[in-house]
Each structure stands twice: as structure tokens, then as C-alpha cells.
Length: 376
Image 1 (tube, helix red, strand yellow):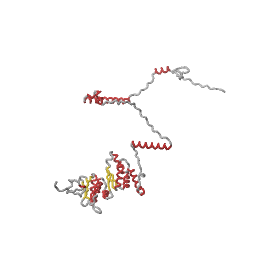
Image 2: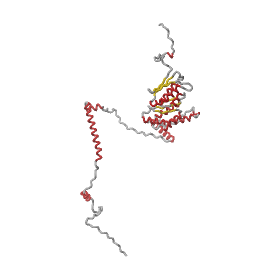
Image 3: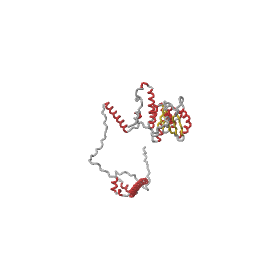
């Protein structure tokens, strides 16, 4: 073979391929980001856009050199680098700034994200809870009565927190952002923020003691138990109680209680398998329904349905008619029955009960005379 030998290629560039999109007419120095904003933020953004442009373009020590654009037709904001941009990371800060503006943060607060010691986090909470009423209640739980819970979180974490729609915007130190995210997500999972706030308060007091800097703080932190336990957790807790009771009885010198086990009923052993149940098709073959045509099957089903309806209707009517049936009344005895009853009763003799003597119509009332004893 004739020809010039191939030039040696570096190992790092051995498998590198040419990119068709990497041409000379592309401006490699420009980076851009864009984000959408809701319709209700349009009026506010138009009012403060001059302040946004000024904050991104100029700075006290040196200009940032970030260009920004507000597109009201498509409802978007965009930022991009220019020739005057000297800080490569400032474009990411500008991207976070327009995101915060889109989520309802005021311009005076959103500008602070351009500082080096401030970071942001936008927590999405809309897809955690499916029920809308439950979602609204748990979101309100983050704010608390008169904003007291939100203020406590801000004081303990040194962060700015804004609850807006389906997101929670947070600004502050990197370490505190993780705490706020944990509090918010736990609250949406039905864990009240007060438990995390108590932990943060205890940690803040423990951090003041230099002797505890190298020790574990688990013994100082509160341990909260779940009220609603699973079946496995209930069984484990029950076993713990039984074990403690057994140890206590052994310490006193008593024998441990034997758990009462109910003996299951003894089944009769049969070497034969159970009889196979007939299929639906087998039942139709026995009754002859399998050979009926489609319209005949429908007619038969309709007839059975009507028969069931008629039986249910007659049963319902009988139950309703029971309320209108007159109760059974005892008839008074006739004159002949009364005479027979009198004759049957024993009359005269010593054992006979004394009956009061009735007076006849012609008999007059006798006069009662009192005898006066005239003794001297």
C-alpha cells in the first residue's frame, strides 16, 4: 500500500465523531433559557420589567451583562448571555430569577437570588394528593392560622417561603432548602409541620453547645409514633407487650402464661378429590337452553325477569296490606252463654261461695232499728 501514514490520534479523541450541527456559523458564546408565566402575572410583569432588565444588566461592582425579553404574545420570559457577560454561572441565577417571578415572587425578593449565598427551590405539590378538598386543607396547613406556621418555618430555616397554587417557592441557603422541602412534602403526606418544627428548634439549641458537635443528637430528638398502625405493626407491638409481661412474671417467680390456642375442627380424611362442579355450558346442555336460538334465549330471559318482578311486586303488596288488616277483637258473651256460666257455678253447701242476695223489684228496703239499753 502506498500513501502517507495516518497521523497519531490522542486516546481521548480516538472515538470522537464530527457533529453535523457543530458548524462555524453557530455562536458558541450564547446561552439562553425561557419559561412561561400565567396570565394573571402579565400585568405585574409589565410594570416591573424595567427593574428586571436593570437588575440583570447592571451591578454595583461590574455589569452582569444578561439580556432579558418579555414575550406577551406567547406568555414567556427569556434570558440570554451577551458579549459583556463575564460570570458563566450568572445565567443560571437569571434563569432561577425568571422562574420565581413566574411563580408569584415579588421583584424585590426575586432579585436576591443573584447573590452567591442564596439558592432557590420550587417544590411541586399538585400531584401528591388526588382529592381537591384534601389538597386545599393540607396546603393551608403549611401556612397555618394567620400564617404562624409559615413564619415559624422561615425563622428556623432562614428561608423565604411562598405558597402559590400547585407549587411552593423557597429561597435561602442550600442546607435549609432541604429542610423546607422535607417539611412541605411530609405535610402533603399528612404529617403535620409542627413535628418537624420541634426537631428544628431542638437542633438549633443543641448547635449552641460545642461539646455536642461531635456526638449524635438522636437521643435528644423526639420520636413520634404513628397512631394508625398496619396489621404487621400491631402484631409486633402485641408481641413486645407479651414478651415484657413474660419477663415480669419470671422476675417475680411465676410461670409464664401459656397462650390459649383453639383446636381447629378435625377434617375427615378422604383419599378422593372433591367432585367436579358442572360448568355453565353443562347446565345449559342439561336444561336444553344451549340449543335455543338467540331470540329464543332473549325471550326466555325476559319471561324469567318478568316472573321475578311479578313475585317481588306481589310480596311487596302483601307487606303493605298487612298494615290495613283489622286486629282480632273478642266478642262479648251472649245472654245464653251468661246463663250457662251461672248454672255451671256451684251453688249452696258449705263449700259454696257466698253470693250476695239480690233484691226483687217488689221488695222494699227494711228499716234499721237500734236497741237502746235503758239500764238504771
